[in-house]
Image 1 (cartoon, rainbow over the protein chains, first blue to last red):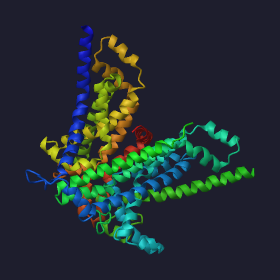
Image 2: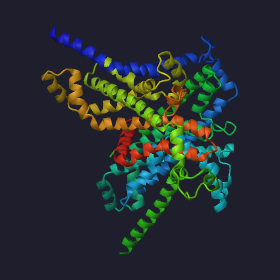
Image 3: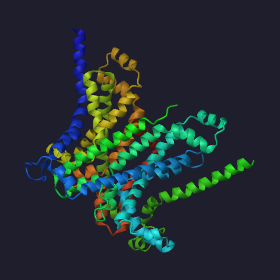
Image 4: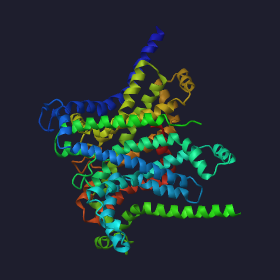
Length: 295
Length: 279
C-alpha cells in the first residue's frame, strides 16, 4: 500500500515536472509543424477564414510551375557545399597555427571570433557597404581588376559574394571547435610518432588528422545545418537579387508566404525543405560516424 | 644550431603571415567603427581612410533617433525571459528524465529532443498564426515565452547528458533527510549544474540577442516592441544612402556583444565549444 502510494506520487511528479517543457515545445514546434502539413494541402492567402483544400496541387505546382523553388533549393545546395568545404579547410588551417604558443594568441583568436558574435544582418550590411563603396575606392588606389566588378549586381558574382560573406561571418566558430579538437590530441601520442621517425608533415597527416575525427564530425555537421539555413545574410546583402539569383530555400519560403501571401504554397515549400534537410543531414551523419577513428 | 635557427625563422614568418591575415580578416569590423566617426561627405569621398576629425555627432543623432536605450532594454527583457524559462524548465525536465526511467519518461525524452530536427523555417508560417491565436505575438513577453519552446529541446539534451555525471547518492541522502523532489532539485542538484548552465546561457544569449527572423515575424509592427537588430535593419534600410548613420546604428547594435565578448572571451568560447560538441 505504502509502496504503491509512493509510486503514484512519483508518477504524478514525473508528469508535473516535465509538463512545462512538453507544453511549450508542443505549442511552438509540434502544433505549427502539423499545421504546416495541413496548410500545404490548401490554398490560403492568410486572410480568408477558411483555407480551400486542394490536395497535392501545391506540391505539383512546385515542380511543374515556375521552378523558382527548385532554383532556390539548387542555390542552397551550392551554397552549402561551398560553405562546408571552405569553412572547414580554412578553419582547420588557421586552428593549426592558432594552437601554437606565441604572445597574444588570444587576441588573434578573438579577432577571428568576433564576426561570429555579431548579428548576421549587420554582417550583411557591412559587406554591402564594402562591396559597393569600399571596393570602388580600393580600385582607384590599387587598380586591381577584381575590385571593379559588380559583386552584388551580377547574378554569377553575387553567389560568390554571398558565400564568401557567409564563411567570413562564422569561420571563427569552426576555428575554436578545431582548436579544441587539436588540443585534445594527446601529447604522448605525438611524441611517440616523433620517436618512431615521423617528420612534421607525417605527424600531422598520419597522426593528428585521423585523431581529429570527432571534431570533423561536429564541424561538418554544424556547417552543413548552418549552410542549409542561410537567411539573414542574404536578406541584408542582396534581398535575393539580382534577378532572384540568390534566393535560398528559406528566403524563398519567406517570400512566397509573407510577400506573395501564398501561405499554402509556402507551407508546401516548408515541408519539402524539412524533408530535404532531414535526409541530407541524416545521410551525412551516418556516413561520417562510420569513418571516425578511436585511440 | 642550423635546425634551430631555421625553426625560429619559420616561426617568425608564420606569425607575420598570421598577423596580416588576422588584420585583413578583422578589417571590415574596424571599417564599420571608423566610418561611424566620419561626417557624410568624408565617407563618400574616402570610405577606407581614417577619419580626419573624429566626431560623436552621428552617435547623438542615432541614439536619439532609434531610441537606443529603449531598444536595448527590449533586448534585455526578451533575452532574460527566454533564458529563465529555458534553463528552469529544461533542467528540471532533464533531472526527472534521467532519474526516473519509465516508459513515460523515455517517451517524453524523445518528444522533447526530436524538434531539434525541425528547422525554424519549416514552421514559421503557421507559427505566426498559432501565436496570434494565443496572443503571444506582438509583445515582448510573448516573444520571450516563444523562445522557451525553441530553446528547450537543445537545452534538455545538454542538461540530460550532464545529469548522468551527478551521483544519485546525493539525491538519495537529501531524500532521506526528508527533502521533496523539487526541494532536492533546487538546493542540491541545480547548484551542481553550474558549468553546463553556463554553456546553455552562452548559447542561448548569443542566439536570442542576435535573432532576426522570429522577432521580424512577431514584433516588427510596433516601435515599442522592436529588438535592436530589427530596429537596425529597418533603420539601415531607410538610411540606405546616409551611410554615416547606418554605420553608427550598426556599431551600436553589435557593440554590446563585442564588449561582453572582450571581458568573457574564455567563458564564451568554452560555452560555444561545449554546446557544439554536446549538441
